[in-house]
Structures are given as C-alpha cells and as structure tokens.
Amino acid sequence: MKPAAFDYLQAATLDEALDLLHEAGGDARVIAGGQSLVPMLNMRLARPAVLVDIMGIDDLRKIEASANDIRIGAGVRQAQLEAWPNLSARLPLVAMALPWLGHVQTRARGTVCGSLAHADPSAELPLSLIALQGSLHLRTKRKRRTVAADDFFLGMMATELGEGEMIEAVSFPTRREGTGYGFNEIGRRHGDFAITAVAAVVTERSASIAIAGVDDRPRRFDVPLPSDPGLDDALNEIAWDLNARDDIHASASYRRELTRRLGRRTIEEAAACLV
Image (cartoon, rainbow, N blue to C red; front, side, top):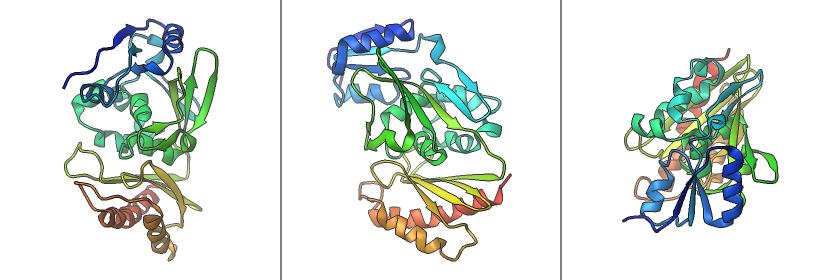
C-alpha cells in the first residue's frame, strides 16, 4: 500500500517547526528518521494531513552532557548515540540496549526521540528511559514542559504528547558510582521486536527492574537484592501483575516465565558489575 495524500513541510528552525505544528493542530505529525512512521503511513495506520520534517534543524542534533544527565536532541540518530565516545562510560545501560534495537541500517536512520514518541511496548529505548527514570522535554509554540518517563508512556503507542506538541529532547540520568546495570532481551531473531526485555539497576542497598514486551507499556518495579530470598517471590508477583498477552510470537505464560528468569539473571548481572 501507499500512504494517503499529505503535505510535506521541511522546517529549517525549531521555531518554524513549532509554528507549522501549531497551524496544523491535530492533523500534523513530526517526522525525523521515519523508521516507525513511514511503515505506518504506507499501511495507512497513520493519516496525517501534514508531515513536518525536523531533520534539517541543527540545534536538535546535539548530545549534551552535564554532571547528572545526558540530553539528547530530537534529531540525534540512534547510530550517532551508539557511536558517541562517552556512551559506555556515561550511559552503560543504553550502551547495552542499543545493539538490540533493530538493525544497523535502521539505527542509521532512526532517531532516539522518534523511538520514544512511537512508544512501542517492546522497544528498548523507552525501556531504558523508564529503568533510569529519565525525562522528556516537550515543546509547543507557546510553552515548554518536562515530563517524567513514568508519566509519558500511557499505553501501546500512546503518549502524553498533546496537539501541536513535539519532543525537543530527552534526558537520561548518567551512571552513578556504586551502581550496576544489566540488560537482557529475548526475541525470535536478533533485531526483531522483543518478546520480553529486562533492564536492571542495582546498588548495594536497592534494586529495580523494568520490563518491556509484556504489558502495553514498559513498567518499572522495585525488587529485593539478588541475595534476598524474597526475590523469586517478588518476580513472580511482577509476572502476574503485568498484563501479559498472547500473540503469534509467544503466549502470555511464556512471557511471564521470561519475566521471572530474565529478571533474576539481569539483576544478578547488574549486581556483578557494581562500580
């Protein structure tokens, strides 16, 4: 299939992009890498009247590091972040997750913020942002706001983005001393959507995991440390708390079992690399 007719507008500045989104209202969509949106257009699952291309905006293609977080602009491609020299040192969890995100070819085009805006419940970047308790910086023509990752993802491909609003950037909290990180994923083939993916953050006193591919959005849970005999019971409760689903790739019971097994493995791996 081919997409329904739409107007294509290429913005040269962020203000121009915001003006275009404001004028078109709910009929507009932002396009950057297009790795999620273009297939949806071709299948006519998305029918915007206007596409606003933001990839010509230099200010959105920056990775900015501060003491506490890494701010990644809406025009930063996944491959650009993957090649960033400080990635493993500053964002080890994201460094672990990125190679699982699609394929080299799609990462060369797809953007970090585009994956977050698409909000696929199996996607690795929303999972990583939830696990690290990051935030998104949203803009309209008239206002700015910052939304915590826990509040941004509302359901399957549903987010807090409002009419005329776009993601300007995302902030991932940086690596902290005394913290270990882990990531594991199971899919039918490398590069396929995750059947279940788990990210873990562990310190000497606390542990948490985030799960993707099971519920309609990534979810984060505080859990006991791997040395605590209550960990398996906690993972079992999480497996049943998640709204697991059957589909052509796996059953709900299989996803729950992966939650238990991958959960423990990932927490143990994170604990083993405390820094």
